[in-house]
Image 1: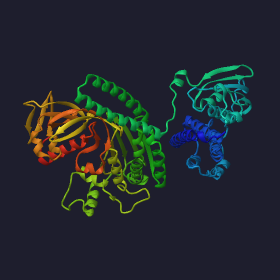
Image 2: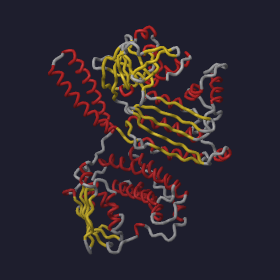
Image 3: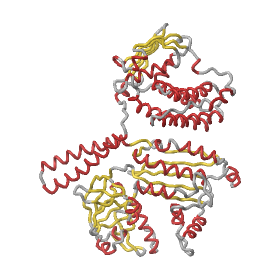
Image 4: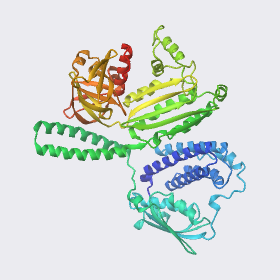
Length: 634
């Protein structure tokens, strides 16, 4: 049987097992008393061993088997796995990843790496330990008849049955099976059912555990020679109906791009229906818009992935960098369940690595220095991910030595970025760390100095229509904040006109819109403030923030209140021209350099429109009022 057609499925499932295996090993290193994670490690290794063997990847199967042997004695022992053994398992994990990469490239697999475990195999094993696999339950042990039914939703039923047969063979001896191994290899599986007789010293519960680890099994039944063992559905009928299939990323990208084109076409038909004023056409366009919206929502659901896809490799990176520097660092993540655009996750991988390595290498102090300053020897790095309407907020904080603004300013002056007599505000001083080549270190390590690579982080965020900022207190730590759109594809916008220019505001950031009426604007502290329904907000014409003072004088037709949860600024406009669902085009660094724009889009009539960055508008107004010496309204 040609198994190559199952290679993509194997690659996907093996990658998931390796990711989970790494998380469990790092958890065990911090919490050696967690017996449940030891069982999970064994399960992942056992699955990898069986999967690799069924695909003919013997070096990977042998390596997983060797790692499995390291873990097995600890499953039912009260003794914790020592650091030396965890290190060896992590080395084995790295080799498994190397082999998986070689499989993806159709290269020869690296040897199993038996020497990695040679010394540990001779080391003392846990005493008074009976391996879990050797603990039979006499009433149910012996010979079992087993019937396995593969779910109808499975695209590869014979492969699933073959995997079940291989795994059961790993805990006993398969006396006979229908179909047999060779028939399953050839893809023969009548009625999606596998029957076999198994001789084993394992109990029924252990057999159930093995079968429950095989994907896409609908039900299975066990019958011992003495009596029938309770049939076990795996999963429930509801779960089978809600089963999932794997979709190639290039196919998913095609769907997203096609939906984006449909949205642009729908906008074209909207404009056409408005101009022609034909009732039947308007109704048809309305119905088409409803279908496109539903399709878009579903496609975007598929495109979203949990933030754990972004954070999964960071704990290992933190551990390895910390150990290489002789530091103690505890890394934690909050908000891994938050869903992000898959394209966003892929693009954030390198920036997050830059930030984490800098935090470990140059943010967290050495244990001796921390103790001398009254801190615990172990440093902390906390990552927090949260969704705020249509934006994603990511913060990476350390409790290290922080960034000294005086040192940053001195470096900036030497580089010619700041005059010798200038002393910018603290937040502007810290912005210098994002300049290319900036570092507060005279020497640089292999993970780069604090600041080295931060220009790359900002460049990456610019390309994602996001922003990065930093705040720090010397001796207390540093926090990098990343603000990003929830999706990189589609955005609801409010179309507005300021002077002769049509622009767009993200609809989620516009909290209220109304016409300006006499008495709503008053002079206050040298500027203007808006009074409306109990609110008092600073007012500024959008045109003024864009540098067009002539148009700003006339921008008194309508007003929008912008912010996040609560309004913080009132923007004066000539008029609001409509509401659209748009396909985003990245603004890029050049466009950001000329104005407060986060992205661009194209309307149905082909007209390009710039999308305003609301946070940048708020920051520009705050800076304008500081320079004029205006007080804060309220």
